[in-house]
Image 1 (cartoon, rainbow, N blue to C red):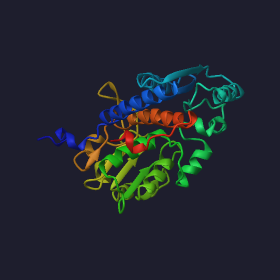
Image 2: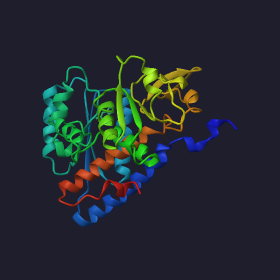
Image 3: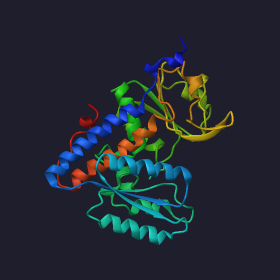
Image 4: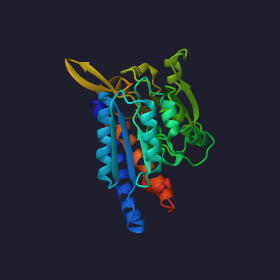
Length: 303
Ligand code: GUN
């Protein structure tokens, strides 16, 4: 049998995320019955970045599907930093908005850190505000960045306790690498973060029981980087051309690594849908807080 037919190795993010979104809808409907309020998610897109446009379209579609209000703001590429900051201020004060997401990357003339720090921490459904970052690293309750939260849910569904396990992350971004490290530490893993200046990257990866690839380099991780039986989480979404066809591939050479790993997330259909489910989860969790209701435990969404 071709081992790639071995479905049990493939982590299906579409199935997992769909189950979570169903629970979010159920809890959201109950919250609405109790409070007569509907959680609102404001998404701000600046410019015409094609990948960002696709991500935002998917986020808006799924927001509506779970019954939340979607508030959309599309701004020209040359909007000033002041105009964007003023919009964030307005959304901060809007009682119909519980979550604010400013899609990254922003144009070069805008200071992203300034914009992200302008978002009220309680509405920061991306978990990028310095206050939420600090809380995450201190082990306090906070809004957690969506992609690493999605990855941690995937990993937890396979291995609930990572005691004694070595997790290796490739990539040190604020969006994925660093918060992923904080979450894996909280799950008792021993964590290594690698990046472009790491020496002998492949031998470090070969030590990983859990390997998270988030570098943005198509199919960089090869079969001889993988420890037999490792769990591979591929965060990369790269558009490339193969055999005259435009396709999406991850940061992991899926075909090469498949035979060596224990489990692997495909691209597309692995981490991507989990990111959106976690955005909606964060929106619902912060809506409970803003509506003065007690939020259910995170585990209620994963049963
Ligand atoms: N760009 C790529 N990933 C993300 C994300 O998770 N949130 C935001 N706001 N922008 C992104």
